[in-house]
Length: 313
Image (tube, rainbow, N blue to C red; front, side, top):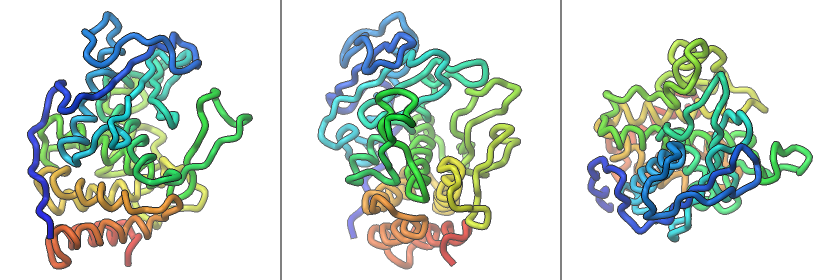
């Protein structure tokens, strides 16, 4: 069986490849891509949000290249575009299908451009779009249902939840990788310190989905299939595969990206656009068995994790 690639040390802002990052200023409008303000190799500008997106995008691209050998979002040196100051009081960040956009937030939530895990999450939507032709759980939004013109798609069903989960997993791993944390040192929170204090501490927890003491007052993420209901919001359902990854990584130990992340990355690349949780549970088992052996600690950890969240019996 092939040996796992060597584990790289956490890297700083210097890109490992000749990336092509371009940052645009939407100027509180929703017309994209916006006004170009910084391109690859340009010096930092006065706009902090621009520099934060430039640096954090570089970190995420470094991770994908150095850990998984991936060359940009599409694995073919694609230019990575991002727009800051998107919309008026736009309290979100997203991948449009072509680029990333970041709002300035409102009185409830903000700090999207400084959060490495959030930027890595959005960039990972792009990665998954190019890994799985047709997208995972993607459906095209009718014009009448769009918040803005470039919002061309949305996610639905278990496949959509898997899409969100893959991005949460990658966002969490990239945050851990940059900090040099082991699975035991990491707190497994996504979007820390982005919420107003009265609302909570983080957007999601992979360690304990739905625990409002760790996240926020209205966190409805599911932890196991016992809570799952058809038609649930994909962000709620994503807690199930999120927790499976946490359990597998914790059982394997060490750094999450070293073995568990490699298994997840290889497994998700083999999923079909309408894959369900059972497909996603079987795929990592096959990936772990192929890479580490069917009697390995890694294989057993992955199978046990999906059993613990009640997807496998």
